[in-house]
Image 1 (tube, rainbow, N blue to C red):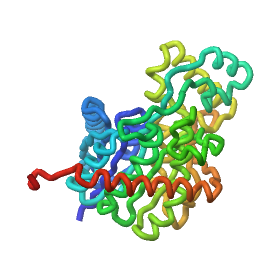
Image 2: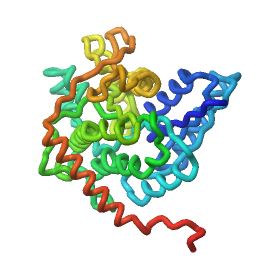
Image 3: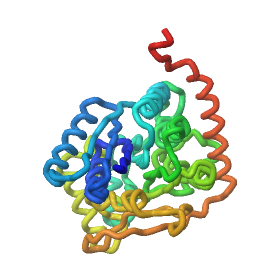
Image 4: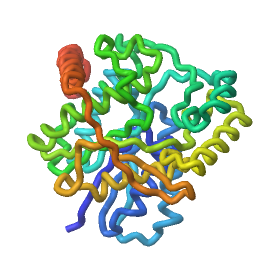
Length: 349
C-alpha cells in the first residue's frame, strides 16, 4: 500500500516557503506519494509557485517512483470569511493533512530610518542587523473584521483555521508554527492583546503566537494526537524587505548579514534554504518522545555558513500564557457565531 502524505504551506510563494517545499521534496522517501498545497492571497503568486516547484521536480526528481503533486489554495488571513472558506475547501479536498507549515506572516514595516541605520551601524552593528533597530513600523492597521492586522494574520486566523480543520488532522499530524528570532516579552502588553496599539506589532504578535503554542501544545497532543512545534528561521533574505529598499540598500543589507555571521551571529542564515532547516527537522525527524515540544527551535549557522539546529528555552509568565489563550479562544467562539451562516453549499439553494 502506497503511503500518501500531504503538506500545506502558507505563504508557499515566498523565499522561505519555496525553499521549504524543495527541501521537503528532497528529503521525503521517494516511495511516498507527496502532495504539497501552496497557499497565497493571489492567484498569480500561487500558480507561479506551483510552476516553479513542478520545474524543480522535473529537474531533480524525474524518475521518482511515486508522484509529487501540487495544489493551491487562495485565502487572506486578514479576512475571516476567506479563512472560513479555506477551511471548507480543505475539508472537501483532503482526507488528511500530515504537515501544516504556518509560514506566512504580516508586518507593518513601511520603510527604513536611514539616519538611525547609519548611527546603529557605528554603535551596535550586530544588533542593528539582527533585530532591525532602524525599521519603521507604526501601529497595525485595522482589518475589515475590526482586528489589528498583525494579530489577525499572525495569531488568530491560523489558530481559527486549525480548529476548523481538526477532522483532517489525524493523530501524528504536525503543526509547525514559524515565529521569529526577534520576538520578546518586552513587546507584550496584557492590556493590548489584540496588538492594536503597539508600534512593534510584528514582534508582539509573534510573541503572542509563542504564548498560544505554549498554552495549547499539550492538549493538542493529548486530545487529538496532533504535534505542535514552534520555531524561528533565523535572519535571511526575503521578499519582506524588497518593497522598502532600493537596490543599493538591499545589497548593503546582505553584505552586513555576512559581516554579522562572520562576527559570530548564530542567526544569520542568509539563504532561505538554510533557514528551512528547523521546519524540515520538526516535520521529518522530531518526535514528542525524544524532543522537547516546549522549547523554541531555530535554524542557525556557523560563521562559515554550515547549518545547524539550535533550541532556546522558553519560560514565559504563565499568567500571560493563560491571558492570550483565553483572549484568542473567546474571540474564536464569537467569530464562529458570526460566521455560522456565511458559507452555504450550492445544494442548499
